[in-house]
Amino acid sequence: MEDEQGLWIQFLKGSEKALADIFLQHHDDLIRYGLKLTKSTPMVEDCIQDLFFKLWKNRANLQVVRIVKPYLFRSLRNHLVDSLELQKQRITQDLDEETVYHFDLTYHAKDFFSEDSDDENLDRVIDALNLLTPRQREVVYLRFFENLDFEAIAKVMEMNVQSVRNVLHRGLLTMRKASLLVALLCYVL
Amino acid sequence: MILSPCVGKRGTTLPGYMERGYKNVEDFILDESFHEYVKGQPQASVNFWNSWVADHPAQETAVATAKNMLATLFDAQKADVTIDKQQALKKLMRRIHQEEQHKPRTLFIPTWLKVAAIVLVTAGLTWLAMFYYQQQAGAIDSMAYNEIIVPIGEKSQVILSDGTQVWINSGSHFKYPTQFSIQSREVLLSGEAFFDVTHRQGQPFKIFTKDSEIKVLGTAFNVKSYPDEVKTETTVLRGLVSVQGLGRKNPPVLVRPKQALETRTDSLTTGSAVKNTITNNVNVDAVTNWKDQALVFADEPLEDMAVKMERWFNVQITITDDALKKERYNGKFANNETVYQVLKAIKLTTPIQYKANGNHIIISRK
Image (cartoon, rainbow over all chains, first blue to last red; front, side, top):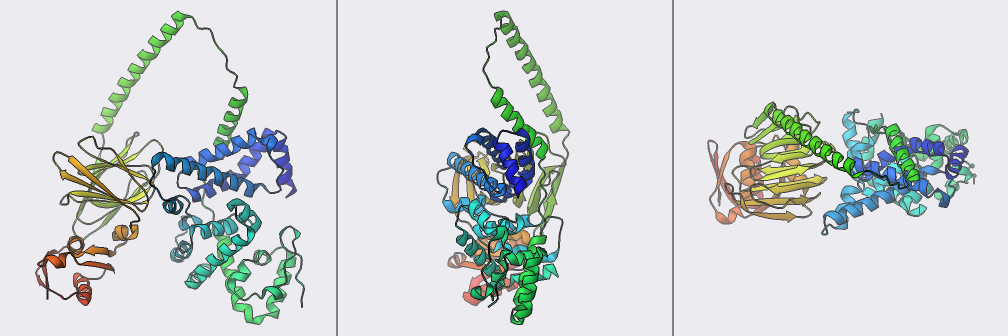
């Protein structure tokens, strides 16, 4: 990924073209990822704007990164968590941690697949994904849909690599134990 | 002992499979080089796994399962993003340029010009306001409504012009405009319905019931407000809903996921003394299951169950014993099960007897 690093360096040096390229390259993936963390499209859009605005403003203090995507994902995640916290404080005081995580930071299994594929087995695949905890689903999403490796996922979710492996392992095990893997296989065949 | 090739991402050497002792489907799925094998490149990984499989016929099934599972996950299409990224980029660039050029400048404006400007702005606003109100009055007059009346024992589903989905439960009445106005989306409900509201910035969705106004942005929730019950129940699956009692100046109450709000109005005609009760950690599934054609009881007293069953089966139920009315049950019944199957299920745990007189069922203690 020489290009990616080169582009990042151009951006750090103050190239607006490089900033635009990075923005356009990652915009859709960031929107998709953000919408897995909260259902509010305006909030995700705002956070992405803020994120790039701050990157530009602070470019003098930023470091050279080898792969940009995990870095952007983690930043967006932090921005969103902050916004959600802020919103939570503004609206109510009596909200428990669990409600927030289950709602706002939940991966909706349905979103994993495009809506027009209406295979009947799809429901069973969705059932399988729904068995996972939000954290497991996030790892599955980042690993298989965004194709991030364990090291990158660890960066995004601020966990260590071994924990990421463990979370994914447990998730896969849950799905298999419920024999829903069979459903996944039917879906493929 | 066979050495594994150097095929991991960014040149990391993979540990030999012998030490790992791969046996389970998950072991393979977690291995990065196995992903490369499924994707068919680079060739080194493909060769490595081909020979590994040949050497380990016992693991054939596990490998096949892992391969299929990975292929499914890789194949899953990404949802389309509808936001215009070029527009988003323009917005970002505007913000960056604004920031960089932002140097406060003071302009000298003569007093007469300031006065003239104020007069002009005021006149303009008045004209605009008049124009706006005329428009609005026209819009309400020309609004065409659809009405759905769902008979007892039946259910209905409708998709509104903005894409919002509504499931309407038996014995309910639902009224909505064929086309929503620009400012807001307003519907009327008497009875029970589940809403999955399409998010629209600046165009809130409002549901009016006999006693409340429920305002939402984009969210899924259940509203139960039958005319024969002095309460409205709002249960939220996801999103955020604001419920405000009609009539007096009642403050709006926010309802969040897994919460249920019960609004009680002492007198429907005066709309006075609204009592709000929020319940946390509600089993939303049990509340909204009716839309999936299943009759669900979640730790409910028999008298409440009777009301549900009356609507579901289109029967009349009388319970003769007061203690019996308070007995609580859990249960889930499919769409094709009869009222007698429900009653039989109750009979398994409680000594009851029932007799039917046409549509009228009388339940008593044995």
